Image: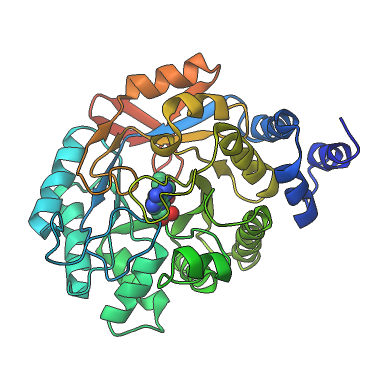
Length: 379
Ligand code: V47
């Protein structure tokens, strides 16, 4: 090992926190395989060979959005061809179908709809819980929560709004919408979306009210490597704060998402390579010493690459089913689905032990479509 990686490896082996400079060296160093190997050591220390997956459904309640982010191929304006917003009943029916098929989680996000009232969102949550009481609803990215707080006319009361949503059935927040925590990148690619301080404020409020949340980083577009490290450092600080303050909620998993240029206004960009994907997941594992899980979202990375990432810091491959995928299909409404068998076989072939989890990482005991968790705690 050379003089740059050697001291970093020593820190990793002594479980010492890596610095910002270490993070940048890991992203820049030519020897990607040693970087992955170091992340693999941490992964094995934390999780052994266990690799999590879940049985989930994605519901995008509407693609109508007041914003027009350049990187997003999903948004439509009201009245555009392909624009839609599901009714409360339609969403409840999907939740019922998901529960009947054995799903433990609904991952629900949408655009910033300019006209739907706050009551639509609480009604949707209540209807899902009535139709599928056992299912965990992981819903609304931080930018949606800010939008909901505005339409609820309580823009300064994030804690109150999140509590109302929780009472209606919200179980946790997904990690979307973080993009890259940098104002230049934000203004170039995501203008109009909330900035990093607001994204972090929403998640801080969620942790304070006891909701678990996830975090993403969308890499491989107009950001620099230093921007990526900065993003990871801000997440690490926010997690330190949640732990120090004794909040009941915190970040559970970080999901590095490779930018997919197709159909977006940034289509001229190439997007990251496979090796860049591996390295980014590995560096996330190495830098985020206070966040337990690193997820490879196979929908965007492919299941084939996800197998390889298990040796590079990843211990979670997300779930089985994506329905009306916000990220991949440019609004065409394509369904994507992989069976439990596909996910388990892929994990086993890579030399790991597949474990079905619920949204808050409790192992699931399953008998067909019925399931339970070993430890009953409130979610
Ligand atoms: O926020 C949008 C990203 C995210 C593109 O919390 C794109 O468990 C790549 O957040 N290329 C939504 N990415 C997905 C997401 C997620 C996925 C899986 C699990 C969890 C979780 C969260 O997709 C958006 C945005 O960052 N995105 N457009 C694109 N062209």
